Image 1 (cartoon, rainbow, N blue to C red):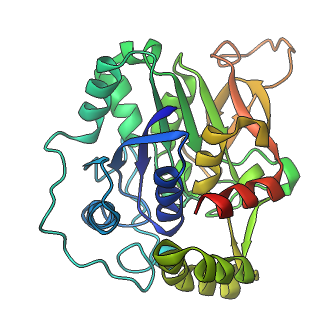
Image 2 (image 1 turned 90 degrees about the horizontal axis):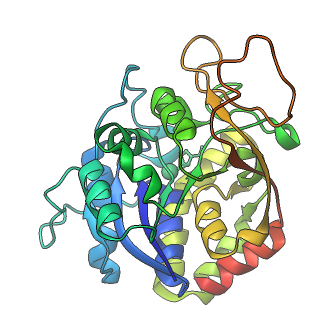
Length: 315
Ligand code: BDR
Ligand code: CA
């Protein structure tokens, strides 16, 4: 069983990932730590509490930071995820449950130290909480089992950026944090647009989920109406990519993905701000100040039919 802390900015596809993790027997969802991104931190945390209340999760809900480390905040992606993060579904303010009193980075440090070698961090939002945890307690790098990240785009299969021509949203929201997390000496697996944009929830797939998967299927259908409208009008697709659930799929079945190894860096400013780059050859460069960073893994191929079937079966 994989014990995970899911760091998330809930978020339509975040909710799809949370419900996936909660439903699969190979995963124990210990906590959802929240971060600004798709929604404000207040709305994101309330959305997580709402899911916990609605479905009776055991997972702790922990509020994280409301801003990036260095850059100016980009602000919620209302056009993609709606005013409060769940599209047309506006979760009422949850009053029966409360978030853990600690800030997310402190919760992560405490949890990792309490169970050395046991916890996988899965991050599907901007990487600020993880970077703050690393800054406050660098020793956690040797205590975490694995760090699985939905973020970035490495140019495979023609996939580059989704918020700028070369940047993916989670990395663009806090490129400095992402660079810290990718270059830390802990095992990182990056599931970026290269693979998440290769998997697609069609309109029919979501309709079938609604028909076959009870209340959870209906909820996923409800929140995805707004998302599908965005995809139809702005991306020109009748359905949506499978971003955050792909990171959970990796934890459940790593064989779904083909990975490439090498150090990763992030461009932190300028026109390519948020661009992720991996050095994957053994070449020696005369001016190389980052090739010596730890080798990390990047998803370059996915067995998307198997992933869609895993999601459907689980939900
Ligand atoms: C990522 O950005 C967010 O909008 C999604 O929730 C996902 O984590 C995709 O680029
Ligand atoms: Ca997300």
